[in-house]
Length: 191
Image 1 (cartoon, rainbow, N blue to C red):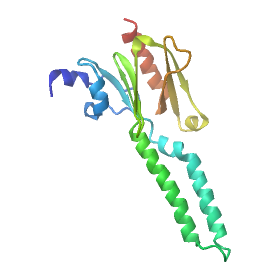
Image 2 (image 1 turned 90 degrees about the horizontal axis):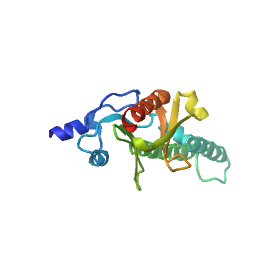
Image 3 (image 1 turned 120 degrees about the horizontal axis):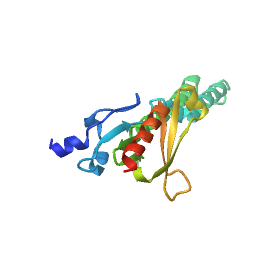
Image 4 (image 1 turned 90 degrees about the vertical axis):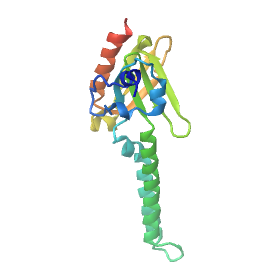
C-alpha cells in the first residue's frame, strides 16, 4: 500500500460506537472518491437496529396476514392449513428482514477533514458529498422509535439551500456523532 493511500484511509478517531473504525473497512466506492491526503475522521453505518425498525410495518403486516390465514384455515372450504399460513407469514417477514440487511449494508456515512459523505442505495446508488466549508446547519432528529433505543438521525444543510440535503439515519450515539461533526466543521471547514 502506498504512503498516500495509507494516509487517505487513516481513521483519526471514532466518537461513536457505530463507527467502523478500520482503514481496511473503506469500501471501494468511497475510497476512490477520497483525495490523496484526505483523512477519514468517522466511518459509520446505521445502527443494526435499523434492520428491525425499518421493517416494523411489514413485520406487523406479516403477523396479521399469518394470523388471518391461520384463522381462515379452520373453514372447510379453504385449501390451506395453519402450517401454510405460518409459512406465508414467516416468509414475508424473512424476505423483508433480508432486504433490510442488504439495505443496511449499502448505507455508509463518512466524515473527513474536508467533507461529509453519505452513500446509500442497493440497485440505484447515490453518493452525496458536501464540503465542510459549505455546511451551514445540522440537526439531530429522533423519532419515538429512535428515542426508545437511544438512536437518532443527523441532517445536513449546505449554503444556498433552504432544506436539509442529506441525512445520516438511525445512528447510535447521535449527539456524540453530531458533536464530532460540529468539531470537524469548526476545525477544518472554517479555514
